[in-house]
Image (tube, rainbow, N blue to C red):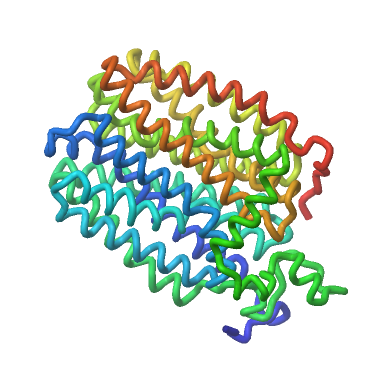
Length: 436
């Protein structure tokens, strides 16, 4: 579809409009993913389910969210970004809307675990990677940082609102809010989103126009037309079979497993419950998560800027190491003065998902832009497997020992191990290109 826009007549490159629509989509999806953390206590109280049982539903959701990622990247190539993003919002809206009528465990497994998990997976970090790779040559790291930071912005926007709604009207108020927000995003996506730069007659932002033919277009991130007739599942699996032969794939996937275990699987799901155990009200705890989201917005955007300029291995070493220290400090912060918890929120918030932009860049360096989105989808799947494991394990540890302390300390140790694990990644291939 062409709008008649051209690089010569438009003052704003259409890539920035696409990035804006993607940011909105990821923001709303992030609000949807953050919802279970607000619902865990009132939901469990109504149905008299243990933390472990409720955590199992959320764990299934997170696992499917990650598993869908690489196939979603192939779906973007097969059906286009606009259709896939619209379908993702529809799944989230339907899944959360119908969950307000559910009363049985299996119904929540199907709706929250299956339908919402699939919708979340189609509107996850891999979407930001696909847009950054397809639409941007210059400023790709910065754009990836901003799109990744949409998760933090989603928390900042939705969590206090959802917590207040749940306190005033019960847990079903939150799914209705999310269902309405995701439904409202659908027409915006359909009207303004475009699949590829050539749909509006432009090249990727920062692409040198001179001397580029069809080969150059493919290299710059425009999908090879052959992929549009390929089975997305086959395409995703073919790329996986190639990637698993590369050592760096396992290092990237392994460290990102730890990233998921130490972020949305643990803190995103259980921090409000852990705070409640320490006599901190739910609304205040949700505000704490929102505060962390604010600092994560700064930290992740800065991480994208830094990944355009510095060696990403050293950035990741610092991110994982500092995150590990902050998680080891958290049990004391929960029991100590309020100032300690504020220090944790700032420190951890700056580092929450700052790992994404350098991981995406390293993936592109190792596997090339053509396959980077799908390979990153598989790496992101490892992230969500880690998150799913941490979600259930933390709930089980809390049920068994009456405390989240072992879960927080264990996650901190894993982060320190991951900090060492990132150092060999792409050590010989890396050549940092200054931002243009």
